Length: 215
Image 1: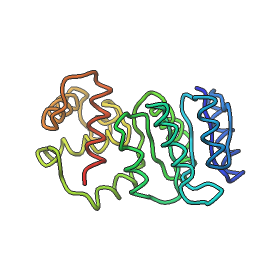
Image 2: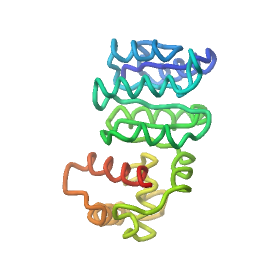
Image 3: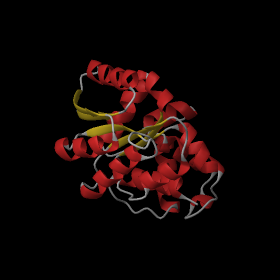
């Protein structure tokens, strides 16, 4: 994969570059400010980018704004946002266009190499990768909506794990169920959420977005 890394802290940026390249991927550009990030995304149109929320010049949300601007110009451009803390507003803004290819992880997740690279690969493939802490925070201030209240406890658990980016097989292992059982739960879940029989990737993205965007 061709990857852009946008992070103003040298040690973290250098560490991510080394980790990404150790897994056989190519870092085509790095950026340390919001404007540099947007320029890099426009120039390289990477397979996926890793972008810190808070970057110079103002250390507010320049990284996120650069990512959103790039996705408005290039719909579906895959971006994985990193944040020191859970910011509900940022997560919701990132998910608002409903096109998938997005992720939101806490920076501490970078230290789990397999988890970090797995998230990058899911986002590059058009999926979602949400940190469990982000999901928990979103849930804590949300109420059921758009069919979610119709889900059984088991279906809701499957959807929550799907939101973390897990495949059906991985969900089955986490819940100690068979792959066929998870398939039945997901089919029932899609029906209750009113998600039509489309290709499986799009259905999963739409279900996850419904789960994360409820308010």
